[in-house]
Image 1: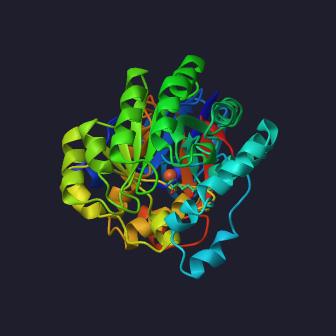
Image 2 (image 1 turned 135 degrees about the horizontal axis):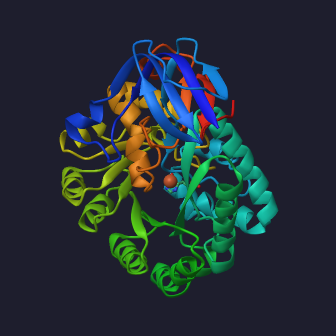
Length: 409
Ligand code: NIG
Ligand code: FE
């Protein structure tokens, strides 16, 4: 099956299969009047200046002079969950903080109750709807974390849902085990014992069943301290998982320092990250997975993205889609916030939603750029250039979505 995408006004993409840091974060390839030849889902040839790839094609897509970029990669989602938490908003408006609600047995623990009650089928159907919505908005690959089961049975149930979605849905879905997302009610006041149980029982089982590629921990005040996080991460590494850490979301309790020290693939959130944590990440080669829509929704400050770029930390931007701190899967909104709040350039932002997250979920060889040999995950945007995407706000500008060489929208 040969597909031609022609009449692309501008093709903008980072290049290479590695994460981009420092001044390289802001380097994109820009080809004018471009066309792309795709064969059996793989990009075969890219032309520019009105030249067309040679040969016959089974299908042609006319981009009508619009912008083409790689499909967006959402490197941090809590895609699978039972229920919603709109009931928290009045509490928040009355002054309760995110951790106050969690400490009172709400927040993540509320979602844990609802996720435990939900069947595999219910969770599957709900998350499938979210993936449809994401694809429709230009996201063609995403990561998905467990972490609302918090016991063997329900963590495995969540991971089975994520696996089935990855197999059946057009979206590529990369699974992360996040059993260390909160201390479940049956372990209240016994965080050490819960971590011990995860290490001795759940991590080995998840590995045995091949249900996750990464392990993640919520290293945060009132959740897991740095010592507990380290123990869990070291065990995860022993079992062959790569490491991610929810670090410095609300308080800096050493999460980003630990991430760098353990050479974690990514540290995520980093709203409260300090100099020493960032220096540690830079020397550990850890990607900063930044979640600006969460800052917006929690009414917090924004992670110091410019300092991170200056320090040579690869920066990625993700949605953090979840029912509490960010009930939005709109990565285009995160792009706007990256521009206005992080003050990143459009080129840096494109890198942050394509190749950098792709590398942080081990898919850099497959997706994240438009280059010969890569999977044809391409979005045509209702925009002449990427600057327009950074500027327009609140609309879905994804016009045509091509996933593995197939026109989905
Ligand atoms: O990334 N911080 C921990 N986890 C999520 C929130 C999960 C929830 O509130 O349900 C986050 O913000
Ligand atoms: Fe998160």
